[in-house]
Image (cartoon, rainbow, N blue to C red; front, side, top):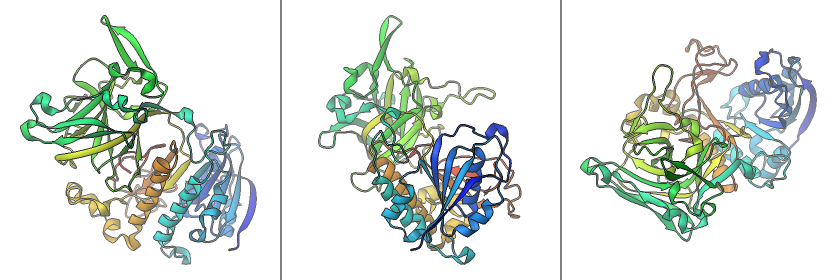
Amino acid sequence: MEQTESQVAQVRSKERVPSETVQTAVSLGTVAVFGASGRTGIQVLRQLCAQGCCRQVRAIVRDAARLETELATWKQPSTASPVTVQVKAVGDLTQLDVRSLSDLVSDVDAIIWVAGATGGRGGIETPPAALDEATLRRLCDALALQPSTPSSEHRVTFRSPEEMADVLDFGRGRIVADAFTSVDDVVMGGLSSSGLIYDEREALGIFAGTVTTDGGGGFCHVRCDASMVAPAQRFGDVSLLTSEENGCRVSYWDLSSYDGLAVVVRGDGRRYKLNLKTTAEPETVFQQEFSTSGDLPPGTFETHFLPFADFVPVRRGLPLYGSGPVTYAMQLDPSRIRSIGLVYSKVAIGGGPAIDFMPGSFRLACRRISAYRQVPPRLIVLSSAAVTRPYWSPLKRQAYPELAQVPIVKLNPFGVLGHKLAGEDAVRTLVSHRSSLGAPYTIVRAVGLNDGDDPSFPGAATGELRFGQGDLMVGKISRTVPGGADCTPAARTGSVLQDI
């Protein structure tokens, strides 16, 4: 296969960017953009050049001629740092093996994947199975083979150790599991039961039990109180602090220098909650949800990143709302975490019924709960909204009929949604299983990408930009104008999230 390479020095964006959005400090060296000559890729390239956030962009394309013609017309604001664009023509991406892909990204600081199957557009037909799934999977294979030492100059794949710290690490022995106690619905007359047991062979904490709605119940809950953690250094990297409150000694974790908690688990397809307590008030907690996968390969774990900012104050299952412009009456104080708990419940975070709740036995294996610092993503993958909808259960289809019947789901040409979902899964597997500490990444599920001139959707280029989780959005968004109508990011920065 013939490869050509050309250098276009100091490419300058044709459109001026408001001065407040231009970054004058260059934070990255080289950013690789796969599919840089496509309709979305060109817009990504424009923004990278306009913002000056890197010194060089490696534009990976099929044919250099089209992109070089485009680049020749660009100008860049004088306030932005000049960005060099290296156009690297590689022909058909689907023909590149792991070694060739590794060579393309071995010296880059970040990767943006906006390549996608063409469906015959422009006389080129690329099957989604070959590009959206197989080639992205080989790219992940290439990243998994790269060195991960803390001294590495280029850091696409792996986090540096100081960005994460274990709070509860079950690998440290049975003592961690023994610090958990059960607080099931029997406290209100229910009949559910659960516990957290220790798996000696795999060094895991297993949250397991049976939940029933009989007796008016419907939840199981285990928690680790900081007061039960002794000695602190045997539970994780974060030491406990103590203070005096009303004449009593109070123990707590100070996680104020972190942005959230990461739970490394192997689940059963159910949705669980993480509970945090910061006060002695018995009925008030802060909660966040995460949905587990029930069909992971044996031995595979997934990491869910839960930002502190997203935890909701709850009392007796109901959110504590504020007044006026203040959404919630309380905010989580990560400097005073008194307890950490796991919950399976018939009640959703908003206080309504959890639509995917199933009575019966459940099992959640937990390897560790860590505090993390949020960092900019180093691997960004453009996927598509609706990728999970062909595989929704009948119960979920019944709950969201208008989402399950959109044209792309009904047609699903060449099985494109399944192949994009498989490509996403390759990224998740790379991060949560094949790398030791994870990788800062983002998967973006855009809704109805268009060029801002779709007559069937007036205002798609100028409407409000919306974000959501769980593949539950419809609409359209313009590639070219910030603030399009609707866009669903399937993952936050560095997150496996709920649910991508």
